[in-house]
Amino acid sequence: MTQWKRVVVAGVLTGTVLYAIVGRDGQEKKEEIASARVAAVTPQRIDIPSLKLDAPLMKLGLTKEGDVELPPYEKPQMAGWYKNSVVPGERGASVIIGHVDTKKAAAVFYRLREVRKGAVVKVTRSDGKVARYRVDKVEQIPKNRFPAERVYLEDGLRLVTCGGTFDWSQHQYRDNIIVYASLIT
Image 1 (cartoon, rainbow, N blue to C red):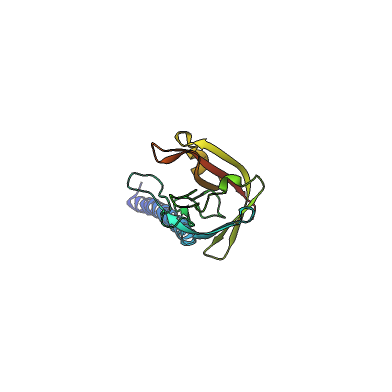
Image 2 (image 1 turned 90 degrees about the vertical axis):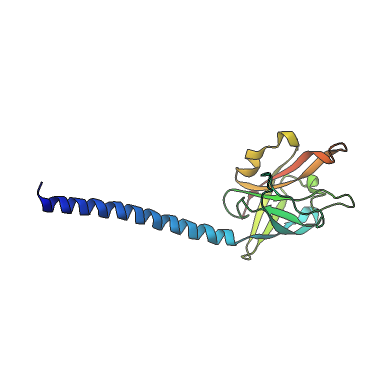
């Protein structure tokens, strides 16, 4: 192979590799921009007409121990959207958590166990859109058998609160009430 042929082959290979890298980076950048746009949208309110529940939402992250944060007890009528789940209305699992009660009174999800299959749940987003879901099922399950994969990985809206009997020695409810709902619009 002559010297010029080697230069041309090296140039073509270098160009192909650079194009592949830049093309891939360009696609990654597009995905990052799209993801940032979605992340900029946040859920603002949850409305469950059959329960006469209409409440504001706050963002929840993780504690130092790696558990999902809970809304503050000082704001019992506020629920929280787990910000590492998808924005309601998008494909994927979206998780909203609220207290059942406080030491003094009922809290935002006090009546959640009463919601029935087929009920509508609406989540108003910061972009003005309203994600509408239909309840598929309501489950009461012991906390030590919490179905993390179904709640945090499967498509749909998940509403989570405490329920069942109260364990006075542990100062907490023994079970969780989980509502599973599918996107309808």
